[in-house]
Image 1: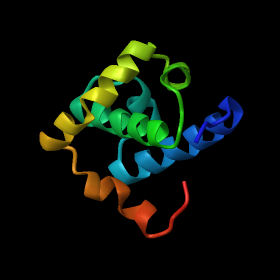
Image 2: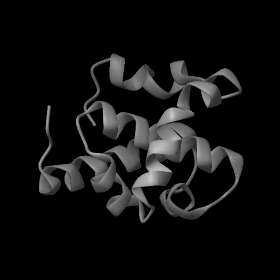
Image 3: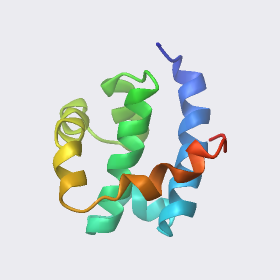
Length: 100
């Protein structure tokens, strides 16, 4: 599914708020901090956006990163999960029918 950039921006804002709420990490930290928890939260945002059909270049624009950095996050997401991100917690609210 291809997502229009204007729709993506709205979804991105809602997703950031949800990830912030679930993780307890403020949105500005998710966007800029290099602390491990904030990086994990940012990786979750990238993963969800990509799975919803967003292109790497559009995700990069939203996060003020390069497309290469986004591809790197996506390619290493499984490794990060194996080493600490508990995706069960991240996606519990979404599975319960809560819309982003």
